[in-house]
Image (cartoon, rainbow, N blue to C red):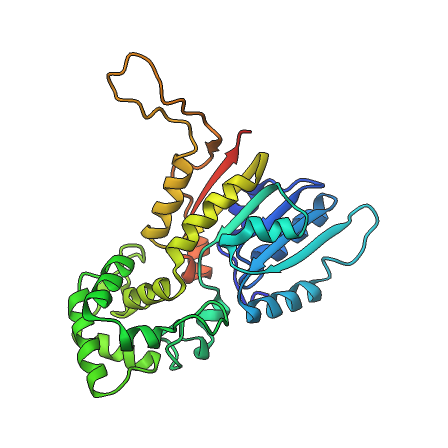
Length: 329
């Protein structure tokens, strides 16, 4: 498992989820399977329970299934029965996926919003400019989805600018969008290296990262993030998914979400805040009339971030932020 995927903030996730015997849990983002395997091991340690894991990527499902099977964690042991099932689909549809499995409430939910190491390290997936491959970036194998190559070769300058600026928070969005439009008039942009090299020629480098302890980030980093978000409609999916997750929690159940950039974190923070029961009446109102009622308790006033030790072992965790809340009803 460690060669395939290193789960981010693992100890912190297990601490906050508070796995208990007989509980039902959901890993809404199976990915490399690292968190799923750890939750299963914790269920075995505390005496058994149920875990459902969701993913839309058939490669991730196949690899995680193999890893869990090889671990032996599901092998029978008297008094420690563990139920485990992988549900294929998008986590925005978690309520429907769990309903089909006969589940209406759970005791804990994890959402790790990062791209798995396997996806990043697979050149044919096109997520990373570290390897040359088709400019794809699709999280699922659906043929109905447009790829990143489709997007960069067909979107207008205005749309490219908006995507790169809004989703990548890239201050050179205009310069990059113009370069893409000019390049594709000569020939289609088909690979990760072609796009990354194009961006490198129009964006100053190196630039200091705001979260990487002074290390420079590649000029194409923000654009690749923006295209991936656009291709997979990630922010819409996240907003729907986090609200669905909150609605699935049983009393005392907890939701733990790991985000990797400010756009994701803002959605998670807002969704939790909306459930804290804070009065929305005008400041000078004599009495409260909004009827605000808390349904969640925030357990992380500030997001939890990786320790220096984790950053040393897993540099890809550097931008991770964990927020956790507990259901009150």
